Image (cartoon, rainbow, N blue to C red; front, side, top):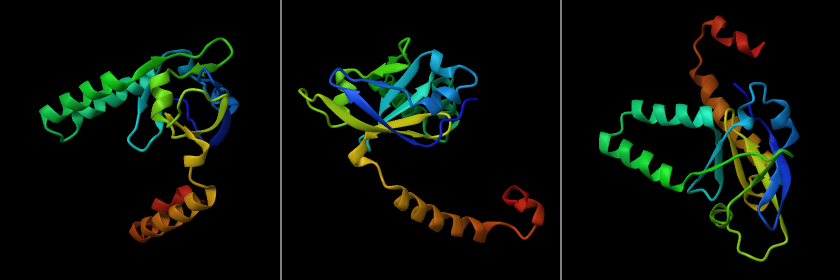
Length: 164
């Protein structure tokens, strides 16, 4: 499965068109960007982009959670209603519909806007550059979490092989 990593700067024009970052295209070893992309607004003010294969796995995963049947159905129904299907054009560009641009906080009448496209493993996020946390903030937060993780690691040296 393709891995989307890193934070990339892109510029979106007034019609909502921007290019997918070259590293994402380069790392798309199984061609998931060639199919449909499912773009879901998130309550954090960004957009989550899932390739079709990931979208389907995500929906199946929801059904395996401990949520009540009613909550599972409601979540799937809500996400189906707010998610937009898009695909790349021949120049590896996305066009975000007006409703998705509004979710990012954009109003009509802008000429261009700077975005951050951040890899999240098998999906990626789109957000306004001004809403993206700095690398220093991310490193600091990771250090705190990693300290907790290393406190949890067993004394068994085989558990630590991945670190060498």
